[in-house]
Length: 385
Image 1 (cartoon, helix red, strand yellow):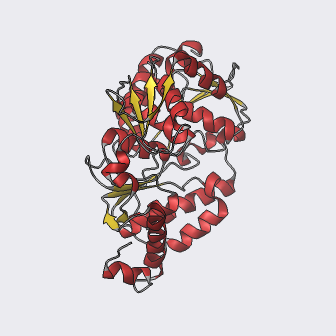
Image 2 (cartoon, one colour):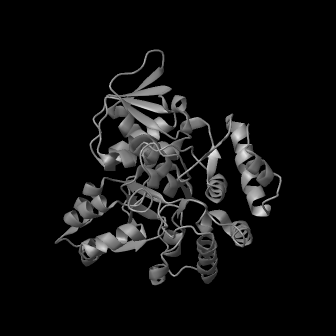
Image 3 (cartoon, helix red, strand yellow):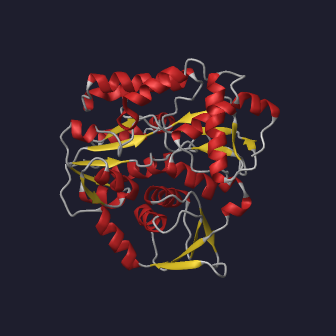
């Protein structure tokens, strides 16, 4: 793996301990991926923010690292574990609030944007097609490669941070055109229509391969493809899909039928009466907030509902009156916090939830140990208002 003279000196520690650490991460990653060199990036997106996930070791590392580290490119941040503006809704432990704040403060000291969003491409961080970036957060990575046409490998929290500090990433994997060609094909014989169906297709396909996935017989709008990307990124290691008119010869193929939709849905969902509705995994886009507000207008919720947004989308939704519409129906619109990987439901004593997200259901069941009823957003409005 070729390094420039400056990169060699940084790797050897001549530009400080922070740069040495960052370059050692990138070189180790590059060797693992078979990279020939490092290339410049235009942006980074960092995970490893939620205190529930990274714990005390993460807090200590970030506080130490942020004393000297500064990002070199536009860098955005994943959601955290709380909405600091609505603590009274969940009454989180004081220790959790304090340490979550210290994590976010450490990133801000490094120059990271306090976006707190798992959909950075919605307002906060949308590079031009063809741009090389280093994004963690699986659903954003898959959507970026597949729909936006940017180029990123599926980064870890540590490798994305190293890229943000150096402004570089290994030239391998999905940064190369060869890595972006479909290696496995799913023939879609079902007719997915709702965002939920697309999420279920993603969960099904993500389990099949770690390579780029080709889909035949499939068309979808940006919201549906967002759900597809989230499903692919959740159930496996693939970081990209492509929509194909026909399958290239010689590739392994499987079919996705209505039967597969039912099977995956049964694995993710239970027929239960939920205590609460959790929406926004990944965070809702402005269009999704608008659709939900339209469905709730003039209705009253029978169940508590929490709708999760980035602060940028929240600001736009509030300006358009969408937040008011949702909250007049009895819902709560949250920002900054992940609904699927934060212990907030447990702080309220919830054990049974409803959601419209295949990704959300996957993590709510596996990480939070909740019972989940998986329904489309339209069915949720119909059933619980």
